[in-house]
Length: 263
Image (cartoon, rainbow, N blue to C red; front, side, top):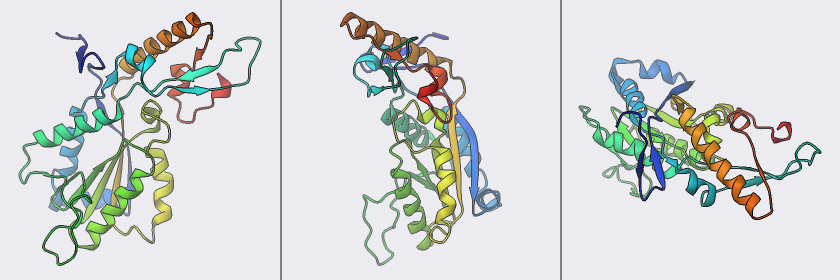
């Protein structure tokens, strides 16, 4: 049904028209120029198309209000509103990764994307651990998609360097959320602005071209609706227990740098 929300997994998740796109790009060691070479024809365009076909899965408001990782943030009490504040994380990180994985699997590229290839391929005369795998690889370009903990992207770029040092790849692409989207996934998530700040400091150890892509929703309305609905349920439940709380507004959560004290 056009415009209708589709509920899945026993109403724990909902998905509508919440698609994502590449909102930011950062070229480390001239990655953009390298990927523009005919040797990598179509790789970047197809990667962006795969990202655009993914869906951002949101917890249903009732589940987000009760079972999602709900953080409490205390701010200085005021006469205007002395209630403790809270914030919610309605985006399901594992399902977001799975959505992009499915789009890679559906790709009809020739040559095809290698799905979860070993960072150290077999047959090179050195140990090859299947647990040390990339997300995808095609035409000597390795891709990592990271919507998890901030520490994970360091492991991702290490795998890039490992494959590059073994002459398996010529360039790499790291896909992460912008901070705006990361704010609705969890605390301490890898995000574009942080990667851009920190990546240049590794110039002496990371010697390959890396293109960093920051993704975020095409339209924030569905996410806002889920956040506001779940927050209202949480406020009502808290009030019913005689312990009233107040949400940190969506407008504050979506800011690049959150300052809860301003609320």
